[in-house]
Length: 310
Image (cartoon, rainbow, N blue to C red; front, side, top):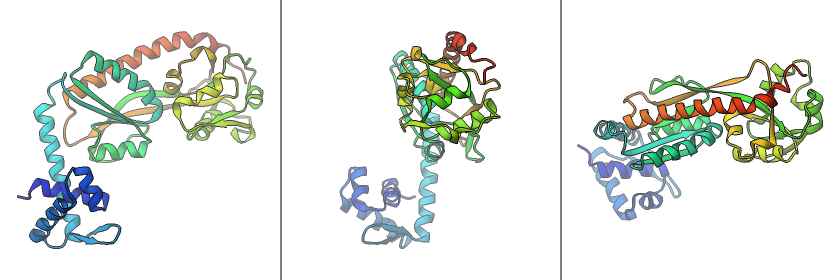
């Protein structure tokens, strides 16, 4: 049996490519980490090729790294079976894209207030990083805007998120000409989202390239600030708009047949979700459904003003 501390040191060196940084992460001396690697190499032969600024894996090193990952997965599965049945205690970890994250994080904190024995960890990340974070076991739960084709991942429907066309509240919407006059507030996914929505809402118009760009931000929580100040319009997912504090400064334009993204809840398929995670997910879905019903009621009047207009 391989010493688990030696394996941890080896896997950390393989990840970071540096003995000094690995020792700092593990809270050990560099000499201790080096000694762990020497013990393993005495047992399995050369595992690392040491370069001046990094290390490389030998074939034996890669095989041992795979073994270390299998041991880690087994340990996590064992721990999940030991403590996963407790709904009131333990860690709930979720990684998600920005828009849905803005909606979920306050709900998670509210859930933690009601269940103080829980520890909530949430991270904002794009889809690719969400998938990797769950695959690497850094987060138990993830949300994606696509269903992954990976046997290691279990995915189920979590919810839907329409794209919304959002204008300043004080602007009279009169169709495409209003958008030309206002200009577009862009963000990292803005052009792709706008093109998807415009192709359905304004099929006879020249598209986003014909509109002036009035601003850009890569912070999802700030995209609506310039819109609220009357500086332009934008297209973004509903949950990002719902999280904005100044709802009275915005108006929505009805887009007929909506453009909707499906959100998929993912976790590792090798073991079931902990009971506390299952209960938290059910609570989040119920809170989002209630929030969506209230939001539709509040937004009905401004939405109806845009019906049928081009």
